[in-house]
Length: 144
Ligand code: RB5
Picture 1 (tube, rainbow, N blue to C red):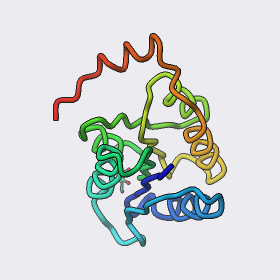
Picture 2: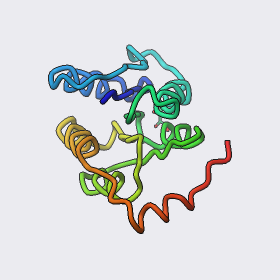
Picture 3: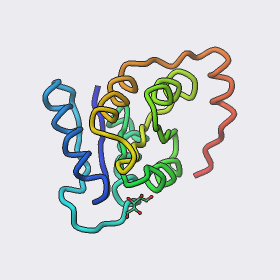
């Protein structure tokens, strides 16, 4: 399973640790940047991750910025992408199980590395439940 991951400068320190985790666990990933703490614009990196997921190049995505807000707003503009801003392990679990989210958005300024790693592990290992949740997800149109 290939994971696309990206962040802005505010998310970079956490994102670099998350990349180390993916490497360490032999999880295939594509790092879409940014690669240092120089100021950048979060939509550029969220868009790259979202396009990788939308095109099928990556099965799931992870986006990180200071609040997780900007990257999730951007990612959700891309066809087929359901990005979920998660602040707890329960949200990460529900994002997959009920919303079939395919991009996890992490708020770097509000979570520890341990929490973020927990979100990723749960997000990658939880399956969509389908059924009534499928009906609901299908009611979310893609207009772009
Ligand atoms: C950068 O300062 C900050 O605005 C960005 O990381 C993010 O929180 C935007 O939503």
